[in-house]
Amino acid sequence: MERDQESARGLAQLEGYLLWNAEVEGARRQARSFTGQLPWLTSAQREDVERVYTAERVTASRESFTRIRDRAEELREEYTERYAQLRTRCVAVSAVTAGAATGLCAALTFLLR
Image (cartoon, rainbow, N blue to C red; front, side, top):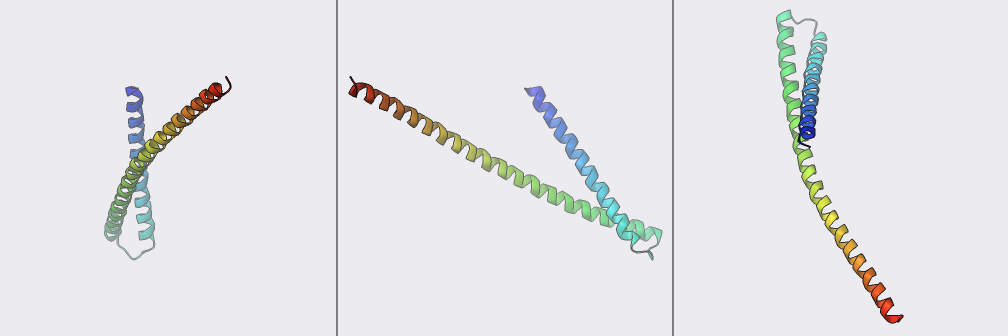
């Protein structure tokens, strides 16, 4: 079981790494596309604009991913709590139903004697 959890954690880290690298590369592509629309920039200016644009986009992405992660954790906790409540209710209803059925069978047996 521990190896499975370790494997799952490793796969999640790899997925996160690949996702983040794709995000950074997307930011770089957008920066190049943006500076491509500004033909009057010198090479040095173009590099500076691309660097700043990429940095801003990466910062915005990090903040967005952090918000998403935090919300996912909140939802996990909320749904775990709801599941526990639902499970408790289902067990209680099952116990009451089984008790009622047993009582009904006992009452019928007693009355039919």
